Amino acid sequence: MKTFGSSEKFIQGKSLEWENVAEGVKRKIMGYDDKIMLVHVYFEKGGIGSLHEHFHSQVTYVASGVFEVTIAGETKKLEKGDVFYIPPHALHGAVCLEAGELIDVFSPIREDFME
Image (cartoon, rainbow, N blue to C red; front, side, top):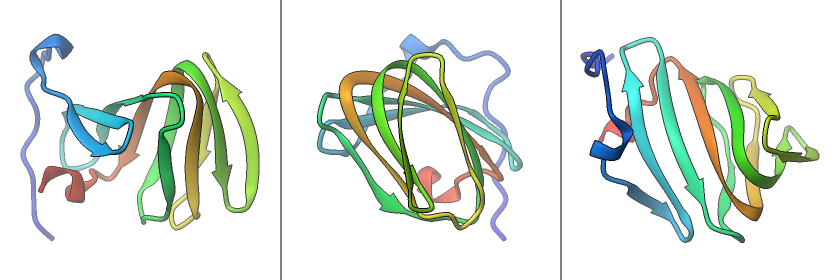
């Protein structure tokens, strides 16, 4: 397994560049070490996080906006202040109904995001 170092102790979000990941979806990797990662994701209205799965545990906080989130075949409408948990290997995705931001926490680190 490839080992990654840690991010800086203090990170100013405005100093990080957005990375486009899909139509209407961009992200910033905010902080990480080899066990945990925090990612800030911005969705325009209509942006889609396509259905996918990974071996990581994920907890996501809805910082703003409204999202239709599907996890393992169950779909819920979530808005600012809500949280969802995705267990390892659960098929999941999201559709943005009102522009917004998600704060994703992954364990272990999403190595694929670092490439």
